[in-house]
Length: 207
Image (cartoon, rainbow, N blue to C red; front, side, top):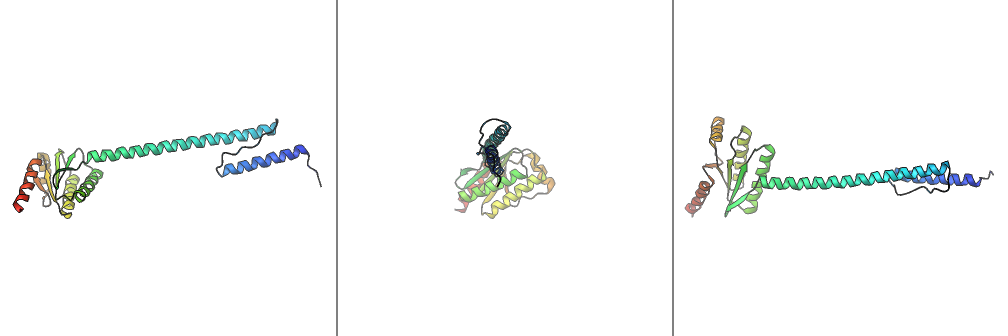
């Protein structure tokens, strides 16, 4: 049986340690290090392996830190978006059982769906019997926007509430007439005050 020289035995042991540590690195364990004893080319090689593992660990920790920071930023952005949505679609209870949705700015398909969802949920939550949609802040409406408000009014009616439309500008009125739109599910009024007065007088009449 061939005997292994002591120096060869130490070399084999170092190689085995290095292979074991590198095997663990392949499975994501970057905490292990190869024991380095003495000097020479083998010791330098083992030290280089340790330096490589340490570099990988530092890079991994940096990536984890970036990932956490990115997640926090995404969460902050989502919170800001939620706050913006709430501010851009405020539903105000102006009377007992009467909600008002003031619409200002540009209304696209995403915002229109959001407004409808917020208004319908508010009607259910407040048990409102009337929803006033005020479009004083809108100067121009295209075909899709007009169609959206008609659909919104129908959805409000399906919940058993009355839908009133206020603040129709001359440009919007001209667009509706040009489109041949008939407001069968929404009652238009000149102003928010007039709409509220009409609603209150209707309650008193029914009593």
